[in-house]
Amino acid sequence: MASGKELMALLPRLSDLVKREEIQVNKLIADAIRTKGVKKILTELERELKGLNDIAMDVLSSLAVGRHVLIMGPVGIGKTTLAETLAEILHISEPPYIEVACHSHMTATELTGDIDIAVALQAGLDHPLAYIPGPLVMAHGGILILDEINRLNPYSQAALLQVLQEHYVFIRGFKIRSDFLVIATSNPAEYSGVYELSEALADRMKVVEIPYPDKDLLKSILSWKSSLYMEHLGLKAPDALTEVTATFMTLVAQDSNIEVGPSIRSAIYAITTAMSRAWLEGREVSLNDLKREIISNMVNVVRGNFASETEKKDYLARKFDEAVMMYRRYSRR
Ligand SMILES: Nc1ncnc2c1ncn2[C@@H]1O[C@H](COP(=O)(O)OP(=O)(O)OP(=O)(O)O)[C@@H](O)[C@H]1O
Ligand SMILES: [Mg+2]
Image (cartoon, rainbow, N blue to C red; front, side):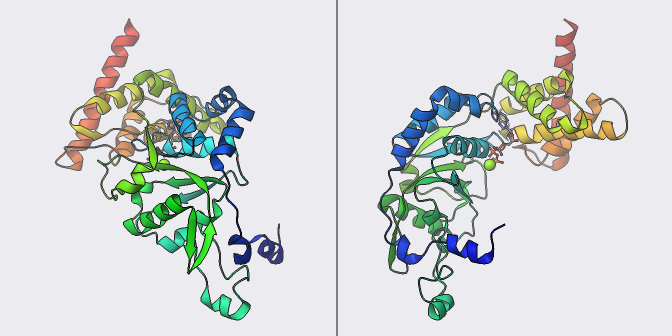
């Protein structure tokens, strides 16, 4: 492990930062794609995510021409995983990307970094602790992942816009060059509690939308990921569980009264916790275990026109029973 002194030596100094040269990040991306090959990139992506190759091609084609990307889609659909995995595979810098988990109270200086006047007065402006760069400065020459960019308040959005427009971050009069490409993620507008993305910022990004997967894709994601998360228990998700869950999710997501459908994440949790509970009790898992877990994991995720939580739970239970009936009818054939 590095000592404090060694760590300090790794921190950039203001006098070096102001001398930074331009880096053509789009060229780095294009070179990485050329070197690795599109086929290999997609094969590596498939180790993490299923069915998102076409979306990934949209992301890559934008980055290759220097356009920032905004990955949009409902909760738990793979947005963050897609952004991180692609940046990891391209690996155009070290570390392969800088990530910010955006939130509504984020200040502009959290993004840019600020000068610590006390340190600067005592040790000089060039002391490594006088200015600790924020992510907008650290991302120079690489990819900046802005996770949940729609949570960013208008002040922080303005700071971001400035660097995207001018390629410089201004720190109390000091001008620091910063070239990077953004992969942002966001939920669609119907999710409450988030800010509108300013038009100017949205205009600088290519929007790539991840659609809700169809039933077959859902089923194969569920059986793959659930089994993966239960490998250490020696458990594998049985076909009945993944089939019923995927059918249930599709029924709910296609219902016109539903605004936000069940997420893949909550479905994986439902299957794995139902199975882990049965495992603890030393018995086989049942569809009733699954029903209980589906309702408790999804009641806070699914949104629609419900008068109360009880009404929502009843609705989920009814849809689950419908999915079980469809499964039984299908398996009798
Ligand atoms: N297409 C997919 N293939 C495989 N796994 C998936 C897919 N979509 C989602 N998952 C799994 O679902 C989980 C949630 O993914 P992730 O966190 O990337 O979603 P998200 O869209 O960023 O969610 P949120 O809106 O909550 O931020 C992860 O465990 C991920 O592996
Ligand atoms: Mg996410």
